[in-house]
Amino acid sequence: MTHSSDFADLTLDELRVALAPDIAASAIFDGWNETALVAAAEMVGCDIDIARLAFAGAKPMDMVAAWIASVDQAMEAEWPGERLATMKIRDRIRALVGFRLEAVAHIDEAVRRALAVMAQPQNVRRSLKLGWGSADIMWRLAGDSATDYNHYTKRAILAGIYSATLAVFVNDESEGKADTYAFLDRRIDGVMKFEKVKAQIVGKDREMPSLTRFLGRLRYPAR
Image (cartoon, rainbow, N blue to C red; front, top):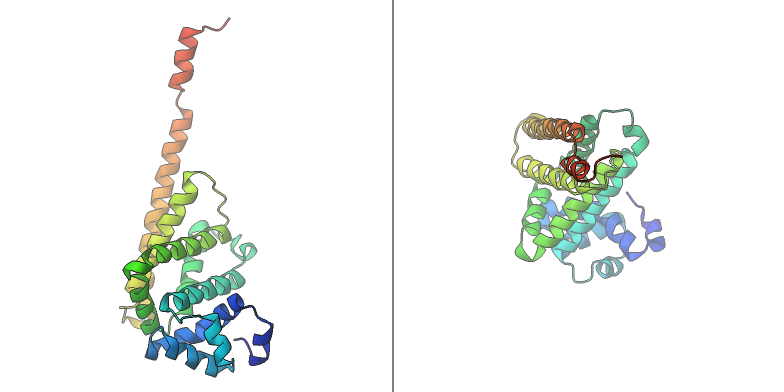
């Protein structure tokens, strides 16, 4: 947590992210609104006027976006690429998504309210962009360097898995959210099987003779 003496050195962008976890904690009771913002500022000793300035207009989606950014940053700090490098790719993704779930393990209601805000028509496009961004960070930490269509499909699939897992999470009453983690494991297993089959198909395609080259040889025989 950022101490009150540190806030003067933060930019407004940094302040939004610094306040976001405490706003989330307050959103359990107050929702994502100015009341939660004021409660968070008071909790950490930040000047309320400066906090309001950082969240000009106190729009719920801005608070949710800052909260997602704070989780992204915490995840990057906890799971740098070198820590993940010794793990299998499946375990890397499991660890990263698992970290995000653990980060919100005790604020189910805040997550539920955040999902409701993100689902509002005016926020859907931004929500998809935020989900894509978090998925991109996870894949980059996991060591993915794809630049072709795989770059986009991997991120789209992971963003879908994460959002679906959160939807299960907020309604999961099992001990330790066991049902949520079981759901996550099944989704990841499905993706890994798909990637394995896809790799086999691509490998076979590479082994097959090129029809274009074959026809070219018929037209222009080798001398």
